[in-house]
Image 1 (cartoon, helix red, strand yellow):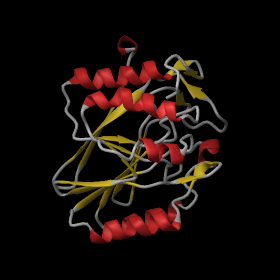
Image 2 (cartoon, rainbow, N blue to C red):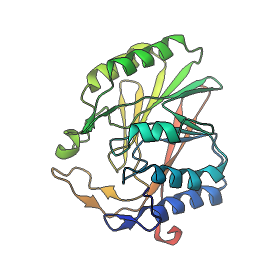
Image 3 (spheres, helix red, strand yellow):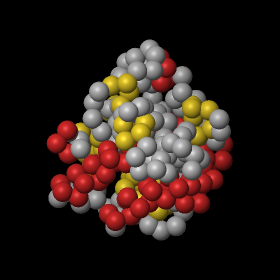
Amino acid sequence: MFAAADSSLRGTVTQSTFTAVLDHYRESGWIADLVAMTGDVIQDDTAAAYDRFISLIDPLGLPVYCVPGNHDVRPLMRAALSRPPFYYCDAVTIGNWLVTGIDSCLDDDAGGRVSNHEMARLEAQLSNTTADHVAICLHHPPLAMGSHWLDQVGLKNAEDFLALIARCGKVRVALFGHVHQEFDEFYESIRIIGTPSTCRQFQPGSDEFALDEKPPAYRRVELFADGSVDAKLIWITTGNL
C-alpha cells in the first residue's frame, strides 16, 4: 500500500489489485476465520499507508494477524496493527491449532533472520501450547527458492529455524511471503508454503531480478483437526481486476 490511492509499484496500482483480491474473497462464498498477512504491507514508509490498508481490509470483519516484511517500517506497523482486530506478531489458538506469527526481518537488509529473542519466544510457544498442531507465519522463506538473487535475501538462519520447528513435533505448516511467486514444498513432515503477491509477481528460477506477468493472488488455507492442511492458490484473473 501507499498513502495515495493511485500510486503504483512497477506499473501496478496496488490498491486496485488488493481490492480485487478482497472482492474475490467476498464474492467466493468461502468463509475464513482469520487473515494471515505475511509482510510487506506498505511501500512508501508512511503511517498513512498502514491507515489505507486498515480501511480496505477492516470491512471484512475478520481478525488480521500480521508479521512484518522487509518493506515494512516496524515501529509504524506495530503502532498501527496492534489493536484488535489487528494483531502484530501475535498468536491465537483455534480448536486444536496454534497459529503464530514471528518477526524474521533485519534493519536495512532485504534478507531475514529470526533473532535469538524471537527464536526463544517461538520455542516457548511451541513448548507451552496445549494445541496438537501449529502453523507459523513469517516473511522470509526458510527453504531455497532456486532463484539466485532471491536466495541471497532469504532467511539467513534457516537451518536453525527449521531445526527448532522440526524438533517440536507439532508444527505442520509454515507460511511465508517475500518471494512474489508460488512455492509449496516439504521440509521433513512440515509443509512450507509461499503465496504470490496481491500486486506484481517475480519470475521463478531467475538468476537476477525479473518480473513475471502472472496476476495477483491469495491463498485459502484450511487447517483440519487431524493436522492436515489444504492450501488452494487463487489467481485473480483479468475479469476480476
